[in-house]
Image (cartoon, rainbow, N blue to C red; front, top):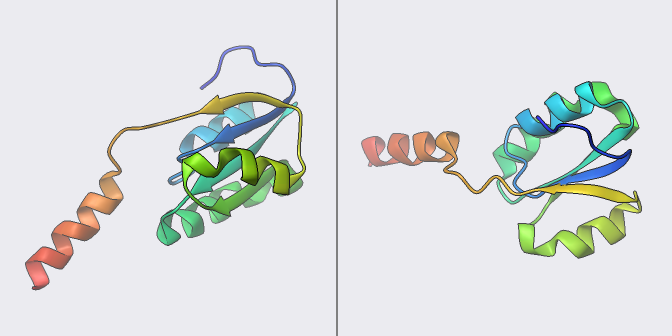
Length: 103
C-alpha cells in the first residue's frame, strides 16, 4: 500500500487481481485507479474486485508500455502515482502447469 499520496489517479500497470489497486483505493479516498493488464483472466478478476469502487476504478486491457495511451483515453487525471509490480504472476504459472499436466 502507498503511504501519503496526493489525490488523483494511480496507474497500476500490471493490475493482476487488483490487490494493490483495491488496497490503495480503499485506504486513500482521494485516489482512483487506472488498471492495465494484458491477461484476460486478470482483467476479469480485477474488474470484479474493483467494482465496489464504481467510477473511482477503471480496467483496461493492454501492456504496461501503453501507459500514456491508456491514461489519455481514460481521461482521468491528474496522475499522482504509477505502480509497476514486475514480479511473477503465480496464477499464470498455475495455469501453465495445469496445461502441461493435461498434455
